[in-house]
Amino acid sequence: MELNIILNHQQIDHKTRRIAYQIYETFADESEIVLAGIADNGFLFAQKIHEVLTSISDLNVHLCEVKMDKTNPFNAITTSISKENYQNQCIVLVDDVLNSGSTLVYGVKHFLEVPLKKFKTAVLVDRNHKKFPVKADFKGISLSTSSKEHVQVVLEKDNCYAYLV
Image (cartoon, rainbow, N blue to C red; front, side, top):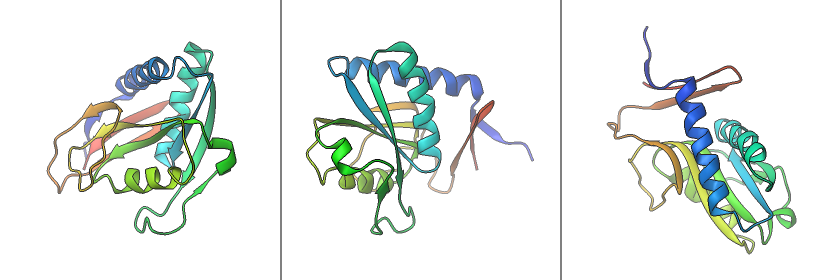
């Protein structure tokens, strides 16, 4: 079966670099930020952004893994760093695909339980099928798809691609 590739490895690298530069420009006056990636692919994408950000800037970038039950987002959300460590910080919540917006909305809600300095969101693919009023501040690509189509993202070290199912 041939995959309907929407982003190849080189394109994902390019979009990751562009998003990293946009994040750097947005937080240029800050000394540190937190990249909070939603497990699993959002965290892998956050790691890729982290790699570029640390190579192009002097920002102190902290990685945080956000674990949540995407099928039941009311369940407890956990993070790899404590609330005290991201309180009054600048946060970028990262995911691979923005579908309905529910994952990002509940992720945002979790972080808003403490005071923050600045909060932004980043996604590789924005599908334009939102049920919730959430937007990606930084996005690799906007894609209008039917509600029956799904975007899958593969983020392996030497093999990254996104395809339509």
